[in-house]
Amino acid sequence: MNIQPIPLNKLIPSPANVRKTGATAGVAELAAQIKTHGLLQNLTVRAVEDGKFEVVAGRRRLAALKRLAHHKDIDKLAEIPCNIIDDSDSDAAEVSLVENFGQLPMHPADQFDAFRALAEKGSGPEEIAARFGCSGLIVRQRLKLASVSPRLIKTYRAAKMTLDQLMAFTVSDDHAAQETAWFRQPEWNRDPATLRRILTRAHVEASDRRARFVGIEAYVAAGGPVLRDLFTPEHDGYLTDPTLLDRLVVERLEREAEAILGEGWKWVTVVPDLGYDAVRGFLRVHPQMPPLDPASQAELDRLTAAYEGLYDDPRIKSGEGDDAPEPVQTELAALAEQIKALSHRRPVWLDEDIARAGAIVGIGHAGQLAVERGLVRPEDATQTERGDDHGRPVPVTGSRNSRQADELSAALTEDLTAQRTAALRAMLAASPDVALAAIVHAMALPLFYDRTGARSCLSLKLEASDLAVSAKTIAEAPAMQVMVDAHTQWSSLLPQEADTLWTWCLGQGSESLLALLAYCAARSVDAVRRPHHHADAQIAHADQLAMALKLDMRQWWKPTAGNYLARVSRKSILEAVATGVSPEAAENFRKLPKPALIAHAEERLADSGWLPRLLQAPTTGGEPALAVA
Image 1 (spheres, rainbow, N blue to C red):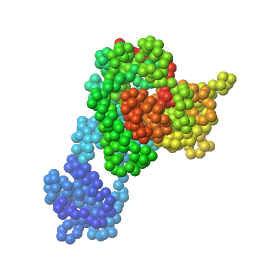
Image 2: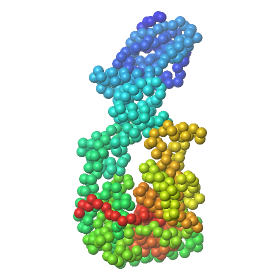
Image 3: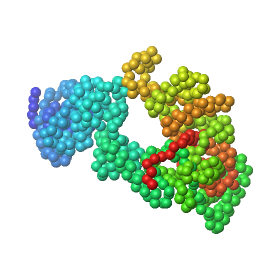
Image 4: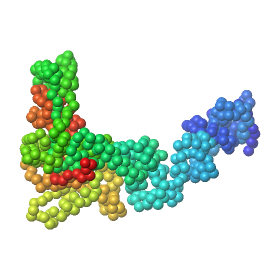
């Protein structure tokens, strides 16, 4: 070996160097390392004309040295120790190949340990990062990986665990919990997402509606710790003190309740989980739309007449409004906007209604404050209100009896109940405890109650009916997408051959089997009302199942022209607007041609939470507790 110092400005890259791809990758990091620790490996060169030397092995080291000289960290005439070889092209290429081929990358676990050793000597992450030319985040990630259970690190070194799986364990510092999450899970269920979920069960995700309601900043200001996952920067972290979070939730809700009580309501109740269960059993009064002043009312009448006049165009009356001349379409749109602007008024509560009604305060689905005002307790209702379905105060959820099914076409009834069945399936698949109860119930009915005619809405033959037969647009429903995703996930986890399924099941823990049971049970749910198919007992059990799952169809369905409005009468559309928006809005739409009525109703009902009776929650008695006043 012929080692000699050669000035840096005499060294040039060699075309004989076999490393072509990635030859300049990571040069900045390598330069930082050479600056801190010096050149730890000599360059291999050969002499060429003009007193130059080609670097046949060490191209990245040469680029790093040139970078240091450019930034004046070293002199461009600095002497670099080099191994000089004979002037032979074949020898030069062979030497380059031997050096690159013989390099063995450092095992990541060795790198974790090396970084940890530096940290234990007092070097901080940023100092280590500067010395090795990488970011502080990378150093913190490596140090976090080094802190994982030694038993799991050993498993990783033995190539029985992927780096992605190892990263998942960094969400917890509890070695026992880490080992339990790995060794007590079946091999098929050790994906990183599952491991993170197991290790963070006691925590609350930052996306949880309670966390969003309180706000991460308020939680941290109150002393609440937040666990960040260094390997999923897009994740906002986990709140590790659920007790503190719940206290902050109640405190804010109580403050909001006090403010709403100041509006004059007879009572205000705090129910954090504000859903149908909370409002079931109440009657409701509605705010009244204040009348327009004479001038505004006259203008609204004029605009409505002009709108109706334009709709006398035969092409529009035949439902082909899109083919109308563009000026007509433009004028129609302008008139519709003006009508909408005049119709949108802020409703006001009557003093006598405020004096006898109350409000429930809770958290909405997206973590926002949710308030249900105008609720009347049965004891505060008049006798007429208790017995009259047509008075101004009406039950919050209404009655999902067969009366509305008779009012709607058989096809629409089947469509709506198919939508509800899809939602029941999606929720049951995520509720193993309810699924277990539902299956036991379905098994017990024919054995012990055969003469009663009682039936479950589950078919334990697992005759998973195709809901697309009953609802043509069901594939677009959010609930169906949930079930499609679940089926895809289970398909990837289950063995490919049916002959091995039994052995696979025997090897699973109870948690995995319950999850699969819930999905299978969910697929069997059938609560569709079909023509000439009498299944009242089955539908009644579907109502019970919906209550157990706290099914809220507002999360799964909203009225559109295609799924409801274009399939019912004008009267039904106006009733929906009157209930979901206001009686005044329905009155303003009453004279509109049906195509315009459908379009306006779809827009106004979109975010109203209105549901037809067939999709409303079944009613039972009971009322909330925890009253503020």
